[in-house]
Amino acid sequence: MVRVERIRKDLEFLAGITSTPGEGVTRLAFSAEETRAREYLRKEMEAAGLEIYQDNAGNLFGRREGTLKDAPVVMFGSHIDSVVNGGAFDGPAGVISALEALRVINEEGMETVNPLEMVVMTEEEGGRFGSGVWGSRAMAGIVSEDEIYKGTDSLGITKAEAMESFGLDPASVGKARREQGSIKAFLELHIEQGPVLEQNGCDAGIVESIVGIRTFFVTVKGKADHAGTTPMDFRRDALVGASRVISEIDAIARRAGKGTVATVGMVNVRPGAFNIVPEEVQFSIDLRDSSEPVIEAAASEIKKYLEEQCSSRGLAFSWEERLSISPVRIDPGIMSIFQEVAAEKNISTHVMPSGAGHDAMVMARVAPVGMIFVPSRNGKSHCPEEWTDYDQVARGAEMILGAVIRLAD
Ligand code: HGY
Ligand code: MN
Ligand code: MN
Image (cartoon, rainbow, N blue to C red; front, top):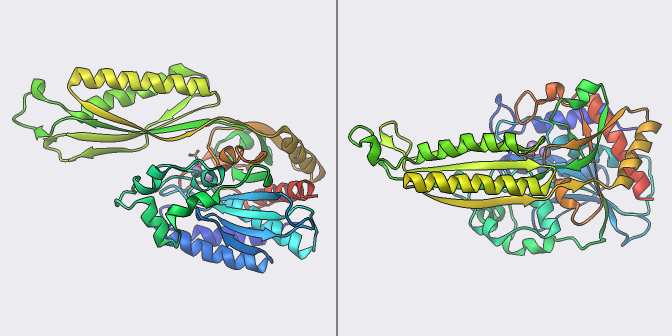
């Protein structure tokens, strides 16, 4: 049996490692906070008898050998990097469930045929460099040179520089790629980040599909001018143009499809003074749907409207795609394993889609994946109010434990 007091201790410790104490968890990729969190996890992983290693993308692994040495590994875990001012459970709930499952396997001296690896994925959120699911994309072999050497964080630091300060060699990221067939299954426990489980009074969600995600960064370029002396007809105001596009993005998503969502979460205005006509505006677009063609159509409609607005206002623009991950269907075999385990352990479940993106949707390129959710109080996430009861995490951890044992035998 997993032990909820250990899960609580781990999660409370990690919740305290943040660069914004009192304002939620901020633990960005390759940061001092992530380093401290990893030091804690390394100690706990060692105590659980795991062989610890890090791959060339920065993913941290704890491995337990099986009886069949080079058999494909059963991998499970999640991430510990967060969004800015985020919550304490998005990511860590999955990492600590994996750790606790391995503690139990170790304490009970269980043997498995396949080796087991828990994983702490690197930069799932993309909160620092704008392109997330980095660790799983490195394992799937779909990272780009540009994002390593060109993409920068808000301080102008490139991912390459951040990786070097983290003791990694950015040029060798390719070595993190996993061969097809080398991973028997990848399992992830995650908080639901929505209200469905709570509304249905269910202990756990069994995920059946994960939405596809496209993110873009758009820069609209106009002309800086004096706010007092420049007549309205002579202006090339980048912010007026960008704001027309941003409100149309909302309308396009509402028209596109039932589950289509689009979010403009970041807007930077330059030079950003009250008495200067804005010269340049950069904004992000996060577009999601369970159907790829719907995402395609919405993205091209947004781009077309951007072109029209810019040409009619004498503005220029750049359109950069940062992330493009296809929608994923979860392996039905793994879903039924989760159902069996839940039934055995008297855990109530609800089959559901995931509107949030996760490493599991990328890992589906290299292995069959399975995903379960544990409830989020009031459906809140990506904010300091994010909460899941520790015994709810423990029930999810029991499902991960049961599924891992089945898959590794
Ligand atoms: O953005 C997401 O869906 C996830 O929380 N990274
Ligand atoms: Mn998240
Ligand atoms: Mn997450």
